Length: 527
Image 1: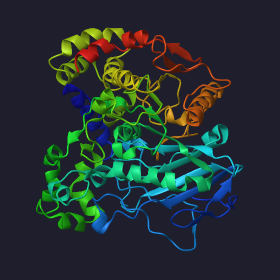
Image 2: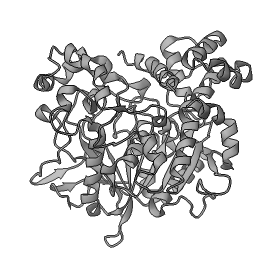
Image 3: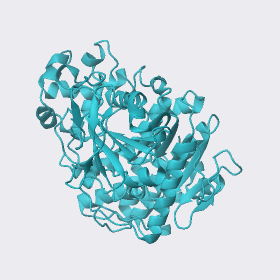
Image 4: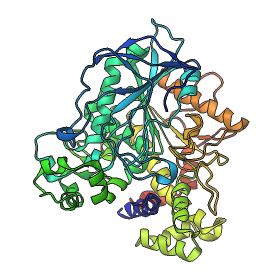
């Protein structure tokens, strides 16, 4: 159904318009020196956490290594003082404060956080965070894992990977060089996971208990790695947060993805067959001459290397890495996107605009959707629109993926539904509620993106945060989320295919209730 792509594209178009399309402290002590496969590292210890920041896991993807599969980092001599985060990967879109601009290609760094008090005999479960940002922005540097590490007893790894045109470029000259092409950012993710397998034991982590988890494009990345034969054995559980739009936004075949990228060579004054010319241009020149390719949604590809087939097809057929999965979405996913549109335009959506937009984006099914989501049923046309878009882009695709995966592995379904969640972005004419990204602060304390306004959780929200950290880290420890002090969370295959609503108080709803509330029969019929 092509209309889904138009819905997503319309939401992001206004978001893109907003873009104009930490180090150590004196009270930190040194950790002991640890040995990795590439060399010795020393981090900083503070507040019960040993932090090792800015460790290279790959050679800088610059010069002749631009638009090639990542290569492992070269060994170093002496002790690497891993006190500061590495550079953020090249990007221009700030996404309303979520991200920050950077012109660095030398950005393939990772960070390791471990409890200071840890046993040398008993290895801890490992959680590897994949940041979001639409695959065109974001970095690992804004996520504070202190509470997850301390309360959950895990070792946590975060990393940067190539983004936008630098990480996801299918171009005929590059594709014909004889190396895997297109999904360079996903290849970076896999190299980081191989680094974890080879090195995490030195930090107290168990390489046989690795959980990958991510939000938005990070969640879609988790689904990609679930579906990639190249990722087999690199992780043992997976958590997908607001990543199910990949079921609607289909990956493109490698050859079919070259056409929209042909403009890059033309814009840079290069022949389409001249890969050396493309690699000779500076980051600044690429950003200036091809801004849409740096700030806009990239096209992951079915490249025959990372992916043999679309993610949704692989999951439906059982051709994926069959590990236990948590998969969920936020109750009000699309309020963030429409809020960014309103901030860019300065105008709330009115009833006429709502009706015209639905008719345009979902032709020829606009009348059916307006009947299911009449503006009169909602406090505002904006809230009618985000309800329809959220069900189409997030809730019902996530349900379809749960149905696919649950035939082959254990799946735990959730909906983050705390509509009191603090928002780090400016107010608009409608409430954000449980918007896209707002669950992150319940796992990573104080998360507000690179430039948002940090908000504190109140006592009730803090309690929900503690329960969510308990679910996530228990899942990383045992492969299922239940534990002492946590409300029961049954797997999707149990009676009624339950989804847990993460709010105060926690509620378990049946699949039938979820399906009716989100109009999934309608959306499924239009796929």
